[in-house]
Image (tube, rainbow, N blue to C red; front, side, top):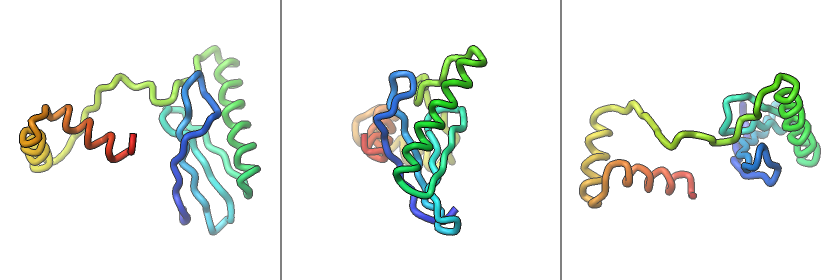
Length: 122
């Protein structure tokens, strides 16, 4: 899909947590397209204007919550992860990361956490 990508936080809440969104502008169809990130369920929405996009977002969340209630399921909390991250990376990257962490006098976990925080600007 052509256009710009925006990742943002919104004040609208899903079960006490802020939701992260990815917003795209599709210049072929001249519409904004959005999707809630951080949960397994796919909650998407689209509209032609920013005002309508906000309305579509609220409706998509409300629809999701209604479907969960109807099916007797708890809505997923965004980013409700265990804190464990398993990666499969080439051994040369693993080795370079290990050397970098050791040269910084950190464990690989501490070093990777710092790199990830910096990458996502937390």
